[in-house]
Length: 384
Picture 1 (cartoon, rainbow, N blue to C red):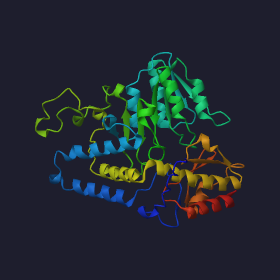
Picture 2 (picture 1 turned 90 degrees about the horizontal axis):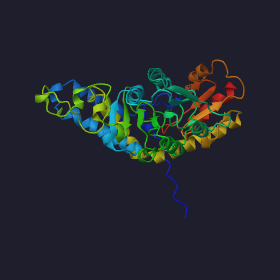
Picture 3 (picture 1 turned 90 degrees about the vertical axis):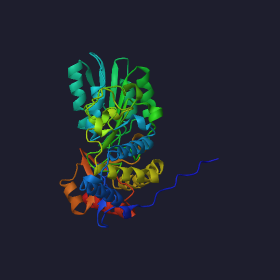
Picture 4 (picture 1 turned 135 degrees about the horizontal axis):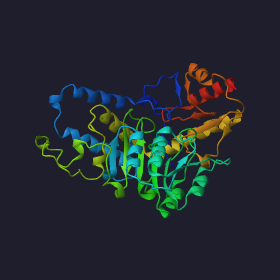
């Protein structure tokens, strides 16, 4: 008996401040904010205007709500979630708690985002470890290339679930067990996939899982999360915040300095974690994602991207194998040289995508519809 098909989500453009004449297919750059997210942030900012209405429990309730929502999105336990301001903060936190040792190997992916490269280069210099850059092979099978580099010298792999330039996918169900077998750590950046692709934290068992919210989590800038495996939760935070300590809820006794930390991953929370503007906005965005369902979002975006890929291939663009890239991501290779001034021409037509190297990155979301697809194909056809 065939399983029931996943119900597609109809276009949600009405939830966003997205004019009809704008074809925004650039969520991998930055998502627009939903009306409800903006309103939640405005209410939070207004609350800060009247601080006498803010009570001590308010400092803790919203972080706990956000912690739980992100945990549900990635299939993790909320006790392992810390709130952070950026992906680079979370990656630095991971690097501060991993010790590769001299002669060990740190695996990175070719063309990885800079925030997930520089910190590992520094760690390698300080520890005597070696950076190994995994090149994407001609057939595009990044998973096979990663597996070919894992051996007993491997200390850790720091990578994204899908690469930011073109969506090249790492099959974590194959890579994670190979790392576990040799005792290597896994540091994952889900900024380009959390909220748009399913991820099962319990099954993958990564050491650190990091995501900024301003892309596929449809949230604000300067917010993010890290899920930390139980084996690292007694580690060292980047900051010694007052809210991370035992007894922080009792404001009258804060000068009774406690050496102990609050339970779980709360010691790793960024300072001023009770952000009165960004947290309400983040919570509103995560609640909407869970209301839609990540599985349905993934299927809906994959269907739209598949249509765009088929149409673009008909114009002569090179399209990667869908089995080797994330379903919500499309990198289009030009049939010839990249046309001069292409991003400016597209923007002038109010069609928004990203040029990354020689690849045109097209990343729609639920606010896009068939009219946006037609606009993109028309402009591309004229450009080439």
